[in-house]
Structure formats: C-alpha cells, structure tokens
Amino acid sequence: MKQVLITLCTASLFLGGCATNANQQASSQTENTTTVTKAEETNTDQKEHKGLIDSPQAPDDSSLTEVGQTYQDADGSITLKASSGFNEKTMLGDVELTVSDVKVMAYAPSPDLIDFFHGYSNDETKFNYVKIRVHVKNTSDQTVNFAPISTLETSDGEKKGFDDDFYLENLYGDYAPGEEKTGQLGFVLNTTDLEKLDALTIQTSDVFDKNEETLTKGQSITVPF
Image (tube, rainbow, N blue to C red; front, side, top):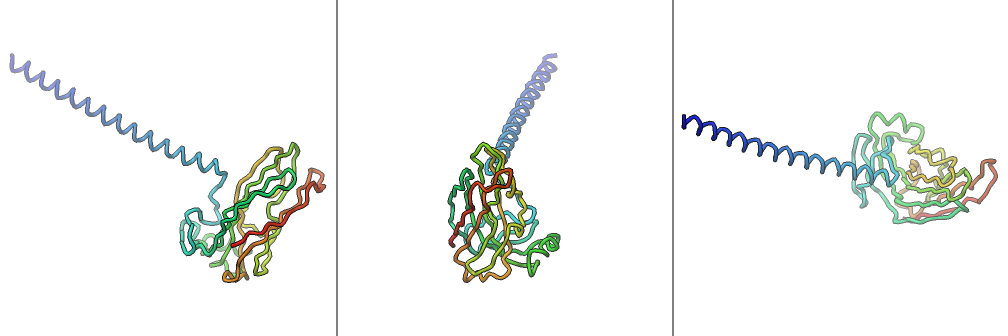
C-alpha cells in the first residue's frame, strides 16, 4: 500500500512539474508573439506617419543611399545613378511645398510592367528616371487647386509635364483647408545624358481658388546634384 502511495505521489509531482514547464513555455511564446506584433505595429505606424506608399509602378528606392547601389523586387531592378541632398520648403501664399529625396535611377521593369511604360519611354525595357518626394500643405481656410510639379526640365534640356508623372499618387488637384499630402513623382528621362546632369528645374503651378482664379503665382525651384 505504501509503495502505491509513493508511486502516486511521484507521478503527481512529475505531472505538476510538466504543467509548470508547459505554462512557462506558453508564457514565453506569448511574450515573443506580443513583441513581434508590437514591432509590426511600430513599422506600420512609421510608414503611415511618413505618408508614403509603395508604388506599384517602381521598386522601393529607400535603401539606395550611394551611387551604384542596386535594389530589386517584384517590380523590377533599379540602380542609383545620382542623388541630391536638396530638402527645402517653399511657401506659395498659403501653400507650403517641401521638395526632398531627389534621385535619378536606371530601371529595368519586370515583364508585367513593360507595357505600362510603353507610353513613357523610348525603350520600355530599360531606361533612366528621376524620382522626387514632395510634401504639400494647404494652410489656408479655403480649398485651393495646386500642382507641385507643373513642368520639369533637366540641365541637359529635356522637359517633362505634369502628365508625364508615372507614380500616379494624386498629388495634383484640390487641397481642402488644412489638408496635407506626402508622396512621390517619377519622370522618365529619354534624352538626358546623365554625365551632363547637374541640376533639375521644377516649375510649380499657380495656386488657384475654387473659381480657378490665381491666388499666388507659381515658383521655379532648382535642385542641384
């Protein structure tokens, strides 16, 4: 009888120990899962705070910081050819425009994007393009109409209009009172010799009211390389 009791007690202690270990492992796994979730939430919050989205037309170039670096994803392959440290705010009446993160890249789109670039490039399989980040804020109490880049011209003489932008992030048009938009614009460079590229000239549109009357004249912004 004593042997039976000893056996039962031993089994009870063993099972209790197993349960404790199992609970500790479950708690540890829960903590790890929570940490990962918080990290993911932090990354998401940071992306939303920057106001940027991953363009479906071009790879994310944020990792390219030195000329010659290459990055590839499902959209294709890009190589950084030139970049500018330009980061300046311009006031056009009540509209605040910040231009920054200007990069020139060589791009080989993925096969499924080649047709998309047929109307933009002389050779849609491989070409150069310039990407410009803008932040626009309407500080007034009325709706205004504005285009951050109405025209763009390289120092090599190539000109682009606002309808040549292939990022298509809806940065042109009406801005409600207090509205802000952050995004990127991309322009294919068909004739520019990158060896001779030392600047870009951006011409903004005028700032218009809802009746299409000019409130503030557009400005010219030069971005050096």
